[in-house]
Image (cartoon, rainbow, N blue to C red):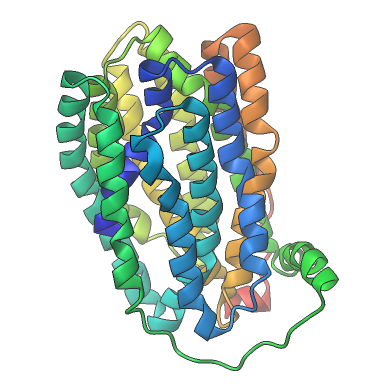
Amino acid sequence: MRISHEPFLAFYAILPFILRKDLAASILQISILCSLRPIIPIFSFYWSALLSLQKKTLRSHVITAWFFAHFPFVFVLWTQNVWYLIFCCIMYELFHKSGMPAFMEILKLNMEKTSRETLYTFLYVLTFIESIFLGLVMAMVLDQVASCWVWVCTLTVGLSMTSLFLQRKISVTERVSTPSVPIISRVVSPWSEAFQLLRDHPNFARFQYGFMIGGFGLMLIAPSLALFYVDSLRLTHLELILGRSVLMGIGVVLSSSYWRRYLTIPSVPSMTRRILLGFAFFPFLLACALFFPPCLYIAFFCYGVAQAGSHLLWNLSGTLFSGTEDSSPFSRVNILLLGLRGLVAPALGGVLCHWVGPLPVLWLGGSICLSGALFLLFSKEVRTTAELR
């Protein structure tokens, strides 16, 4: 699944750049795209939470979410329109995120902690090795052939959808079905469950608050990135993909085994601080690329190092903090808080870009990421019996 999905991810990662460079998307359209992508997980949170999550539904949930996340991109071949691509991104964010809690719970049921984390890390590294080679090929094609991105989109999404055949073969251990509850309770209970979870697990809450601050800084700079790449740095497809796929991929590959050693509850605050420091360096180095171009590639390398730790921690934190409990509620909290910061940060970043330009927004976003690391450094750690299990 991961190997067949990586070509689409490589394309999806540079889609805002393509919208600006190839389709002349406006600042408003870029801001809307960057705002909606993180807001949509709130609806993903409901999609996941309102399911009974009986084990017989986990596999069908993953399959359904995967199909609807990718299917709209099939029609890009006939509809090269900025607004339609924004709609496709909304669908992808909605259903891709909604399938994650069920998918992580399947991993937890089928694998022990050590083997699960080892396999997940290995596959993450493998896909980025794939991404490095894909990026080189994609970059050369996109710069040589006009509107080639349409065919790249169609081919990569078709390859990604072949994973549906593999997902049908996933085995899931049965458990006792959960009782049905009234509709009103299903609407209210996910929120109360999430906040109760944060109260009952103070270390998990501390991790989420620090990640929330740093994630806000990253989302704030999201609308400015495509504008900065195209309007300020005037990058070609090749230059962007060399940074985004190759240098970032190298950073992920070289650092993943390092981050893997920190996947324990006592190490989470230290790991999160280092991740946020890496993210803080990214916008600062991008700004320096105006005067010293190699800083662009150093920035993407630093981002790759931080992203490797962030990806492992964000996706596996639910299985890590849950202990013997169901990991799905913990994973849903990740999605909920992602959506909540997405309600404000990208829209604010878009407004600031319009007022002051992308460069000051990069500096501000990096400073906020740095403040998230400082929060985790000076906040108190609370150990509970549940988290020590």
